[in-house]
Length: 464
Ligand code: GLY
Ligand code: MN
Ligand code: MN
Image (cartoon, rainbow, N blue to C red; front, side, top):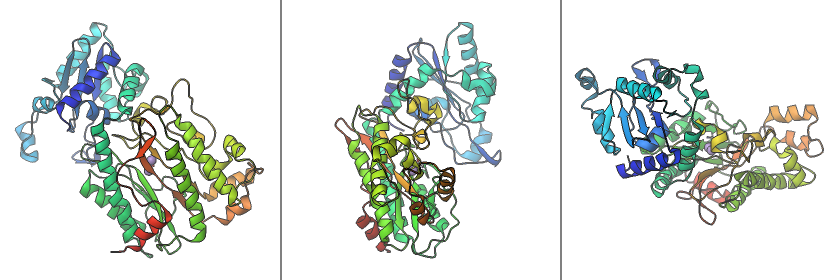
């Protein structure tokens, strides 16, 4: 945990933003894998971590704005639990670490909420993504479990998103710790990959680094020579000379701040000429986008800038034809770059996506596009100093998409399908960094991870 002053201050800011009523925040419970006592690795809810820092299952909290009182609710362990688990602090002792003097039981929480309802006071809560917490809210607030997300507080969501979007210096340090572990996850993969090895062996090794140096992965690792499948979680292929492999992975620190880094490297250790050509376009898009980041600029415009770099490069190689501005406006480049440039990063790898992207990435004045490619942009609004984002352009040769668009005669004025079809089997290339928006521009966070063709080849050739 951070020092309790951090959590006290965060709650004070939240109270000022929300102004009145009660804020009810649920922590997460253990999540059973195949029977009740055999659980997945416990992951606390990120909003609960942000305001309380207590990394333990079975808790709920009320921030009473009108009475200026914060209370943690949960059941203390009995001797029957302690014989299995060892000595455990009480809920009250855990609460003190968060600067909270009041603790209660779940039955007392129910009483607090009943009293608030009888007084006609507003109870603010956020969208739930775990079904057990929806059921808890049903029991606490008398709203059907399947309906609770229809009664969330936009005022609370907006306040939390505004606050969590701007990272403090201690949060940035945590994110950089995670990225420095990613440095090892990326460079080790480059060093130990040899032709004939199964993806699973490298993916498992990389996951081991995340567990040994951090708190495990921040999302299921993407490690595949089929990098053209954007979220490829299978690791069954044998890596061969000539293959490119995408390693999109991240870890969490002990305080649960995430990294999310992608590198693409040649299994043989050397890029072929045609791999180099495509790689350099993606690298240029990555670096141009990083340069374009500035406070006040819409991230959507940075995405479009990266799309223009990709379209220009692919036009020079003969994959695209016509006016680059038109190509990007119409979305023809999305055949090769079908996803968004990036997303917020913090306690969640896609930070605060549990609130819905309308709140985290868009607002009333900037609506999500419905155009293929652009519709997958998770964050579009103006950037502010302190915002941490990923920059992750890519080029992919997706056989099904190439065949479908060609059969439909889509964008034939812009796309050279004959050329695109020659690259089926090439795979995909993505290069992802994590950046901080500063007062004047941006800073790539963490220790620099090999990224240029020369740097990547150098690490791949260092097989110690
Ligand atoms: N892990 C998927 C992404 O980069 O957002
Ligand atoms: Mn990623
Ligand atoms: Mn990402």
